[in-house]
Image (cartoon, rainbow, N blue to C red; front, side, top):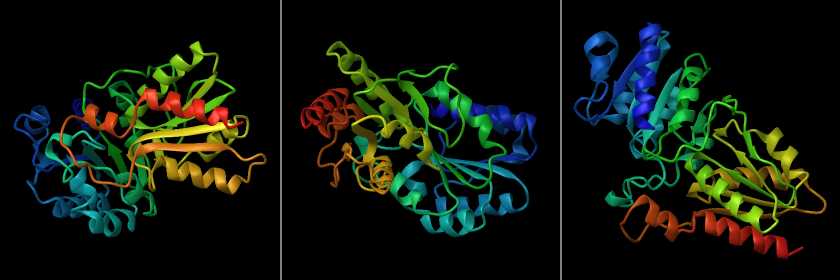
Length: 309
């Protein structure tokens, strides 16, 4: 997914002289062709993320469209003030490409596990937040980011994630994608958890449970219209995300459902990372299993909610 996003930046830059790239602590060879063929629009600034964000804002204020890439935790934790004041307050066209959202960097421990980025950035005016499901969807996203107004945060997953989308699903920033249709339960997912949602849906169908799946690749602006359209018809709703359950997709959906005042009320549950720092090392997959961000947990949760009828 990361490789795809950066390759797309290079392709876009070849066609559009407004596009600049800034990297922070990139590996040797990353975007080598960009550096060799368009050196005047390619910068590597080292481990100085707050400065990098400020630099990108300056370029954007001069009419440039700037793509910045680093480890995602270094954006939201080290550069938060610059994101708020330099990017969002001025509403400039900077695209933050954050490597390793969620539990990707679990081998490095809690300092690199980004469990709160949605919650942090959702609260900032003018920020758009995107978490695609796979590399194919990344290819559909990147051209749309060029002329999109204001700053964008693009959360990258691990790379080599299962391909679960295709060109049949239209992609538009801020618009959810219905992936399955069913009347008994609704799963709302984002990012790579679409894979778990689809696996759970296929399994539930064998038990006669018809499940809808909404892929919400844009956390902000959130597609409230589509969420309410599906929620109004379905009694059980479960969200799943590789993010703390506080303030992320689940929290956003809960706000929408609460304010809709459905009668009868919906049976609702959030699946995500609990309010803890990880207390063990391992792999992304092992911690997702530890925190029950799995297809199996979706199945169990939906069946339990259906039994409450």
